[in-house]
Length: 373
Image (cartoon, rainbow, N blue to C red; front, top):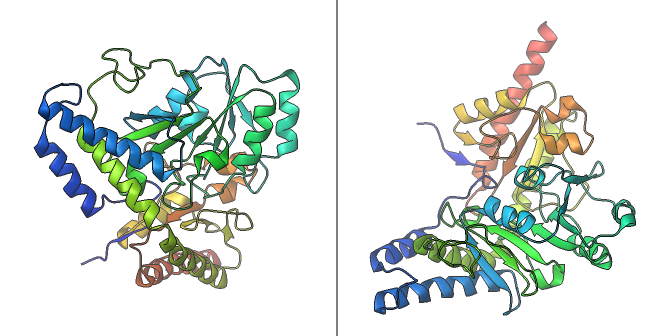
């Protein structure tokens, strides 16, 4: 039987057992949180308790708005299209949910390490920023690169711009502090931290006016009408609480990631570890195997029982060259041969060894075939 090794946690992380149990209890409890009877009040309490858990997970102020959504993409859409700002600026390597949220978005260039140049950003504000919302991804979902969001927010606020950060990939992997980041809005998603699929949140300061994306019903502070997904929200709250409590364990994940990269480079000095010189998420490695396209790698590893990806899971299963890597100015040959490996605390050294065996085996076979040609 093929060993199943899951190394695609940036796409989704399997639901935690405690979360599954909490979701089931919420489903069994029933009740509509908008009803005034006892069951309704109980459901409302469950929602509000989860709202507090999510708020605390990112150290948002008590006055902050915590608006539950169906996913991180919807949270991003709320932040960028439901304020009174007409211009949207986004990092060139931000998630497609941000870069394509509407036409006419100004993309802020990044350097080869995937970082925004603050001096270049300052130049963009030459005409002012009081009609601008700037969106900068806190942690890139493909490369793991950590942006200097606090500094970017300081610059943007000097020109009266609103600042949003997509923190979907950061939560549970690195500390996320809404107040320290200095942003106006922040997006999250439950399924990246072992919570249920289909629930996310937008957190915003009390001063940000967010217009209704769905006005019917008046739920979620009048922003998102419709009966709340109580079981999903309950699961999200618990997952956020657990993930932040377990952050110390990410140091062991980083050790495994670093071991993996060191062994790959020892076996294949011509391989490329994307953005290896910058600050990255401790669980993420984006590795280019020279001469072997990403699709071949992903399929080969899958046959070996190893789950990886060629980048964002939101690319409809496509394995074409990563738009993120192209925006970083990487050679198209590297961009088209890069595979993302994303770990979690459930991974083991044996998992790393299994992937290394599959990776080096494919690399050696391709080199042997090339030499024989």
